[in-house]
Image (cartoon, rainbow, N blue to C red):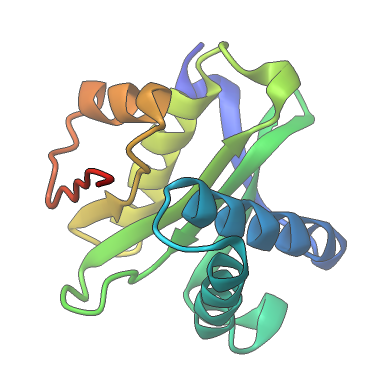
Length: 159
């Protein structure tokens, strides 16, 4: 699998209408599963964060949501913000990358990250950032293998 075998296509409005509720629910679940807050508080945070990112809904400037396409078939999603960081206007941000379960393990996640880097670079960005939840060891390993460095690390111990 090479990045040449995977392409990015801007999602359609109909795809966005399908993706957004799943994205919101998935984000709330990740927050809740991290133990950071209750499910109700996680849902409220996810809703507020999403509204901030997409103030104009589908047409929100700087929010690029793509379908990952392999052999003409959609295999996942990539949400890239350009710029995506409040303190660094030249840093793009990967908010979400998702390969559909039936297509995992084929190198599409790695290829999608390389395409995200190319897309950000083509828009004048000089770096690409992302967050990864601590329990997501597969993603952490992928990002490390692609040369991403840890910028911050939060830890906790229940008492």
